[in-house]
Structures are given as C-alpha cells and as structure tokens.
Image 1 (cartoon, rainbow over the protein chains, first blue to last red):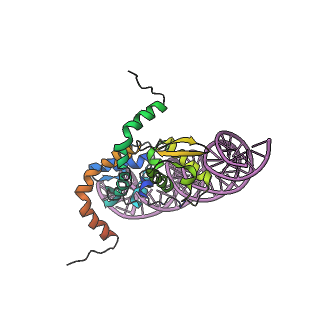
Image 2 (image 1 turned 30 degrees about the vertical axis):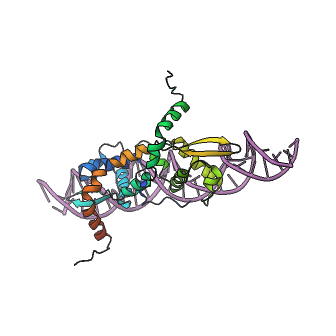
Image 3 (image 1 turned 90 degrees about the horizontal axis):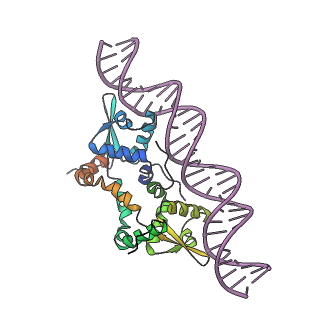
Amino acid sequence: MRPVQESDVFHAIAHPARRHILLQLKAGELAAGALAEPFDMSLPAISQHLRVLEEAELVSVRREGRSRLYRLEPKPLREVVGWVDEFAKFFDERLDALGEYLDEKHGKRTRRR
Amino acid sequence: MRPVQESDVFHAIAHPARRHILLQLKAGELAAGALAEPFDMSLPAISQHLRVLEEAELVSVRREGRSRLYRLEPKPLREVVGWVDEFAKFFDERLDALGEYLDEKHGKRTRRR
DNA sequence: TTGACACTTAAGTTTTAACTTAATAATCAT
DNA sequence: ATGATTATTAAGTTAAAACTTAAGTGTCAA
C-alpha cells in the first residue's frame, strides 16, 4: 500500500523512545538535552526523534538562549483516540469471553471448580 | 533504545493497511482473501500483515475449509487507549488556545472582527 | 574573540520493514 | 488421483528507519 509517511501520527508514536518523550513533556516544556537524558542513545538520535515528532506536529519548539524548549502539542493524538474509539464497543461486548479464550489458548489453565 | 519488537501493539497499528484490516474485522470474521481484496497488494503481503497482527494478538485465526477466518481481538488496543489517556487532560486544557496557535503557524489566518 | 555549551545537520552504516514472485500445503470437488 | 481454490512460507529485493560519528550553527560568558 502507500508508503508510511513521515507525518503520520501512528508512525510517530510507534517508537518507544518517542512515546516516552511525549510522556516527559506532560510535565511542561523541556530542553532537548533534558529529554535525551533518560536514554542510552546519542544526542543526535534524540534530535532525530524530536524531528519526527515535530513533523507529526506532536511537539513544537522555541529557542530559549542556547536551549531549545520542546512543548507537547496533543492535538494530533485525537486521530489516535478517534481510531481506537472505533473499537470501543468491542471492549465492552467481548472482552470477558475473550479473556478466557486467550488464557486457554496460551495454556494458562483456568482453575476448574 | 531497544529495537521495536514485533509484538508491539503500537508498531502493529502503525501501518495503514493493518489499521484498515482491523477496521474490516469489526464486521465479524473474515477470510484472508476477503481482507486482501480492498488492497492493491499481493496476497502474501497481506498474509504478512496478518502475521504481524497475530503476533500482536490483535487477531486470532481459525480454519474453515480452505479459508482461514480472522477475528478481531481488541484486548491489546487497551494499551493504546491507556497510553493516549495519559494525555486526556491536555485535550481539555490547552486545545482551544492550541488550535489558534497552529492555525496561525500554518497561515490559515483567523478572521479578525 | 575565544572557547565552552546546547544543540542540529550531514553523511554513512546497519537493521528492520515492506514488498515481490515462486514454491509449497491443505482442502475440496470431480 | 487430478486439478482448482485458498492460503502460507521461502527467498530475495528495495526502501525506510534507526542509529553512529564528525562537522557546523547559534548563544553566552570571560
């Protein structure tokens, strides 16, 4: 099918590092360096992840001295919410039966009374 | 960071074809062939996408004659819901101001009164 | 104006993903 | 048994993603 485009929100949140960055930004604006700290990854790598997030418009940046402060832009996440919401009724309807089915399938045998 | 593993739900829903397959399965069980039809893609390609969805436990399969019927398994989508819900409060708090900011940024100038 | 700081951009490598065609497997109908 | 149907698995190609190190760009402080 069509190639996954860079600006795709679903693609942007597919990577755990990028998801973690977004979580960090819940606390407020943060500099690139601060965002990079929890990761065992080079600064350029983080910079590139930030670029992906920026292109997906999940973050915005502003300069502050020599730092760049990143800010969370939650709007595009609505697309994700909208998509998963399509499945909302299935969470209610089938989930209990489903739970048992999956347990069975994976050999976590259900205690019989 | 750690490589994106195959079983990751976020990775599974990152591809538009896979998202579309899941939507198709909302209607009920469907054979691989039926699922493949809307796509301009070879059958093996779809089969591989189905494998990714299966590994993420977003679908289950059963044989029915020579068909394989795929069924939606919504459970793992809870992880996605859980994650985006972390940002719920930002949708309420900042979204109006944000909307204007983004419009400005992209030159969709706001009508001034 | 020089040097340290906080980054980004460039360039190149390695890994993973996404396809293709060809071959194989299971089921069914004759 | 043979052949058609429905699909998967194998094998190989191409493209995209995720990193690395090295070089470059502003900003600040002395």
